[in-house]
Image (tube, rainbow, N blue to C red; front, side, top):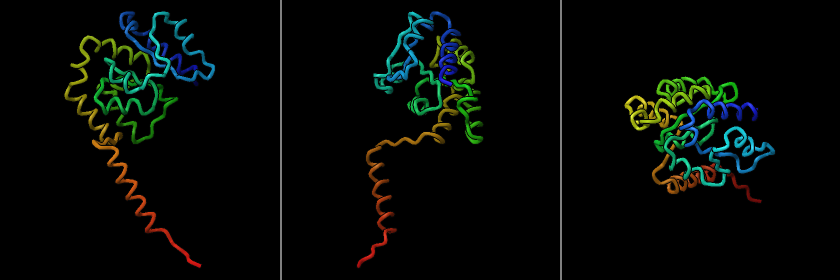
Length: 183
């Protein structure tokens, strides 16, 4: 499955015009698991910039013009919540969605955020590259993004305070349900 995933990534890159390919930064896993990721990328695309997975993801996402998410994980939820222009693509055969989420991802597909093939994602990136803000800030896309985030992303203005309240509440419930037996 990893080889299929890598080939999808390579197909995305090769589907981009060379002028956009030169602007990519590919992030690989910090531990390679014997996949020779960097060597594979350099063999296919010698001029590609590679991040070896050591830089904090938040810094990379916040500094990019557009974030391309290629698997079903938390990074695309974070980038959408931070309102960072994002294109998501993955093969639904390997990244399955439950029935409830499918309709929400269809809405993301309708505004050009979600794609099921690397070629479709590359075509979208090429189409919007010269004016990403125009695409990203459209009323329909922003409404869809906000709706998606309100359903799938929980964010707090003061996360430490919120976590503290949750812990206290949980602890109180456990104490109330605790049965003490004395000898």
